[in-house]
Length: 264
Image 1 (cartoon, rainbow, N blue to C red):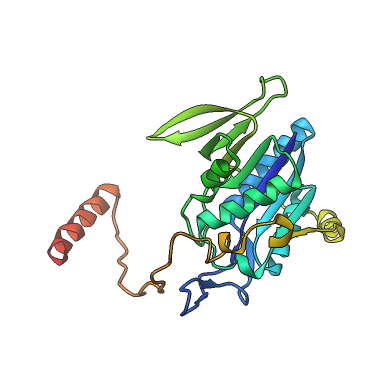
Image 2: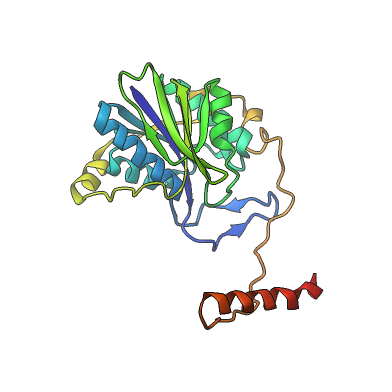
């Protein structure tokens, strides 16, 4: 079985600028890293690889600097990496992004399982994974806490997710896509040897021309949604340290809530 993992190269901190014309984040001069939930998706993929002998291909759409995240994924146990990059991809919303990812995954080959992080730290929409499944016309399970796959499981994969305080076991027929919840496992740390090996691997690079996508279907042109405004949240306010046991602290919190009611 081949496994695709779609990751995103996100800003390391919230100290990013906003393009005044497009109102999108300016990522070119910002240090980046793998989206945290995507690390959990990679870990799930590597665990499945160790159990089944699967081959893992990691994909990301972003600027050339996103190569850093792909190298990290390779050092964690992924076998091959694909960088999907083109200036015309900039400013894509979740619809345009999922369309490009679907095209890249299909262009590479067939996959029995596709994994992504459930949400990204810079957008937190949780939309790209399900949209990617829709583009590929395959079933999907969102916000999985753990996965279970056996070679004799009749071509299905199981996922456990939390819903309304309960654990639910779901099964999907392969090929399928699953989004993995942040913090559901402990992503492994790359070794020095694996880091050195990942730096020697050749990356595949896909542009719009390779994927044969019309220019008006990608980036800002291909995005049906529009960012109306972006701004930094106001900082300030005050904090108060409560003393006493739990019951006393609860009474103090209730008193603070009551005193603030008039401000709403």
